[in-house]
Length: 535
Ligand code: F6P
Image (cartoon, rainbow, N blue to C red; front, side):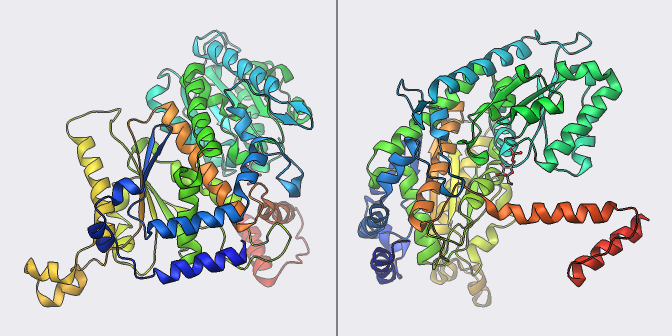
C-alpha cells in the first residue's frame, strides 16, 4: 500500500469515525441516488456505508496513487503481471467478444480461444442432442465433473446458479474431495453406460483430482471394460502429455493456457460441463455478461466504477476499521454456492502477507469471506452482525424477478433483503424501545446500535448475462484490492507446503513396517494413533 497516500486517507477516515448512517441519511435526501451506480444490468446501492462524498474522493486517491489505471491496462493487455510465476493473467481474453486481438509474447491468443470455444460448443451439442453415445450405444444422461478448487468451484457454483437454463434430462455431478465418500456417493447415482466423466485439472497432477479420476476410471472399466474409457472420459487441461498418459484421447481434450488462473477459469474450457448443461448459446450470454463488466471496469472512471468502489469500501473497513471479514448474502437460492466460490477467488488471491517487493506487508490484506443465502442466514448468524462486537460489512445480492414465481415467496424474500439492510444501517435506539413499552431491564438487549455498513446489488433477474457480470465484478474487485495492497493476487504459493508434507505423511500412513517418524511430537503421535487403529 502507498503509505503516504494511505496516511492521508487514513486521517480522513479517522476524522469521520463518528459518521452515523441515521444522520447522514437525514441530512442528505439525495444520498441514495448519490451513492448508487449501475453497470451490466446491476445496480449497486452503496449509500448504507460509512462514507461521505469527500471520503469517497479520498479513497479514490488511493486507487490513483496505486497506478490502478496502468495496472488495469496491463491486466487486459496480457503483461506478465503474475510475476512470481512469470505469466500473463488473461481471463478477460476468454470473454473478449470484440474483434480486438490480445497478445501474449507477440501472439494473438484470440484465435485459439475461439477454436476451443467452438470445439466445446460442438461437443456440447453432440452430448445434449444424444449424438455422443456411450460405449454401449446409450445416450449420456449424467456428467461427472472431477476437479478441485478452480476446476470445481466455478462450474459447480455456476451450474447451481443457472439451473433454470440447464437441460433437465442431463444431470451434472461434481466430485472434488479426495474423501472417497464424494466419489462413492456420486457413483451410486449414475449408470456407467450413460455417464460422461469430465476430468478437469489445469496441471493434471493434482492429487485429489487424479485419485478421483483413476478410481472413476477403474469403476467404469469394472462395469464396461477398458475399451469404454474413450467414450466416457474427456479432459480439460493445459497438460496434453499427462492427459494422454492417463488414457484419454487428446482429441477429447479441451485445452486452456497457463495464463488462465484456476480460480479465474470458469469461462475457459473449465466451463465445459456447465456448457453441456446450459448449451452454447447460454454460455455465450454468460460471456457477454462478463464482457460487459470487463468493459465497464476498464473504461469507466473510478468514482462510478463498481469493482473499484466495492474494492475501496472493502479497504475502508479492512484497513480503516480493522474489519476481519465480510459476508456475502445472496437472496437467491440459486446462488447458494456463490460465497464458497468467492472464498477461493478472494482468499486464494489476496491471502498474502508479503508485498510485490518481497517485504512483509504492514497493513492487513485479504479479508475472510463467508456467507449463506438469505433468509437462512438470518436465522443463524445475523444476530452477531446486528448485535455482536465485530464489524462485518455485508454484500446483499438480490433480483427483482424470480424464476419460481410461486405465491408471494419472492416479495417476502426481497422484503427481508431490503429490511435487513435497513435494520443494520439504522438500528433501533433505546428511546424507540422505551416508546414501544419495552421494560427497562430489557432495553439494552432490544436496542440495535445500527450503523452496520452494507452494499446492495440488485439486478432484474438471474440470467446467464447478469450472473457473468456478477462474477466479473468480484474478480475485478479482488484485483483492485491486490493492486492497492501491493501484493501479487495471481499466485498461490501458500497451498504448496501442505501438499508436500501430505505426500510424506501419506507414505508413513501406508508404510508396511513402522516408519521412523521425524515430525514434531504432535504429528508423530497422530500418525502413530492412526496406524494403530488401522493395524
Ligand atoms: O489449491 C491450489 C490450486 O492450485 C488452485 O489454485 C487450483 O484451482 C486447484 O489447486 C486445482 O488445480 P488443478 O486445476 O491444476 O487441478
